[in-house]
Length: 83
Image (cartoon, rainbow, N blue to C red; front, top):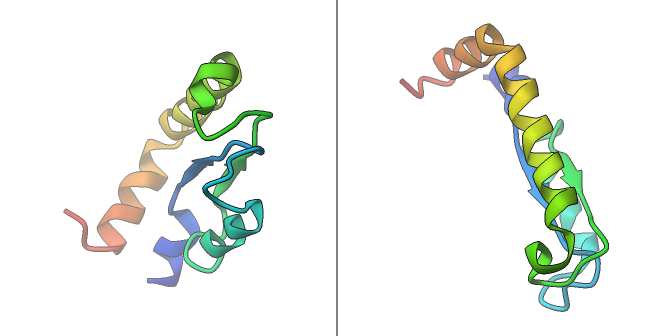
């Protein structure tokens, strides 16, 4: 399963000024998904209200990267018995 963990993909978007969470909590994702992509826009809890373009660009890039590596994603899912 270590190989599957290395390929697992996660996009985390967290508003820098979100008072519901601390930005230090982002490190909690690292043990489970070491390659997680973490973006912290200059935004509050309702990040889409103030950083929609930046967030959309992050999501688009994440999706484009996933499309560019469909074989690796399929192998990861097979290795993790997700099918």
